[in-house]
Image 1 (cartoon, rainbow, N blue to C red):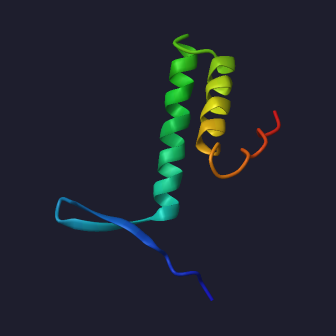
Image 2 (cartoon, rainbow, N blue to C red):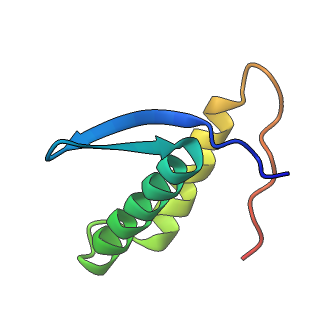
Amino acid sequence: MAEEKKIALKIVTGGQEKEVSYDELTLANNLAQEALVRVLVRKNVVTAQELLEELQKVRTERYASSQPPPPPEPK
């Protein structure tokens, strides 16, 4: 049996309604984030190392009150 698509939002464009699932929304967000990071690194606004360090800081802050942060992903 196919899993039911959970709708996150509906978009109306040109009179056409499109339902967007949480999976589609998550993927679109991840793609946009990756594209932004690539541009920032390519333009030398931030280095990959600075980004990884900041990501670790955010991870530590986010999980500080409830549980230890998950380990960093392998390189």
